[in-house]
Image (cartoon, rainbow, N blue to C red):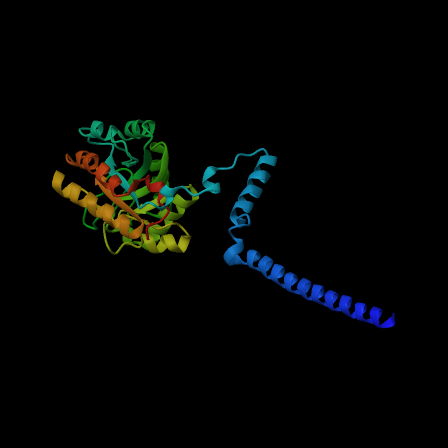
Length: 303
């Protein structure tokens, strides 16, 4: 009987050896499949997105704190990637002839109010009530031989204290201010002392500053950088030539610049006869090109 048991044991030993071999092969194949599924190239299709996990975690934390989560934080709006144009309307507060035309423009506009002007406060209240943005159009010394603009002007001849007093008075006259831009200023905007005082005062009072760029020698942008302020600079004047054709051409240039740079700022004037009409006709054209109109405050920097 012994040979039988020996033969049988050898047989079962051979079978068991084959089973072990199969297990090893199956284990190796299964392990490779798991590794492939967990790899970044493939596993991303089967695992929750880390961004979604973080977002859900944030929502949960805010919910526990009794706070609402801004949808903009959860998902960036497609409009965030559109080229943006901001149009500033200067010299508001004196000539009222074309004010009604600007009331009916259904795009965001930033109205720059002249201090000490006859209708400045009234116009600021009007355009603010229409949902538009208000800034101060600060008169600044234009030419060394020119007589003073009048009350509210900042000049290089003023002491530091006089500049601050003038700024404070101008700001107090104009409600709903978000920022400041210079009126004229070919001399004052090249003076480091003057601009340093103006920009520090604006920053301390939560106001941004737009350099109207009436001279290429302006030091506004340089000092904005030194003070850690966003650089906002006029890219082009829209209505220096007061006819509808030129206004529309300039608006298209502004739109093209926005498409190239991402953002663009243009300045127009409330006393020009063609400006409101040009904006009304070109707004839908630029929108059809994928351009979004925004307030000046919504363009953090364009330099």
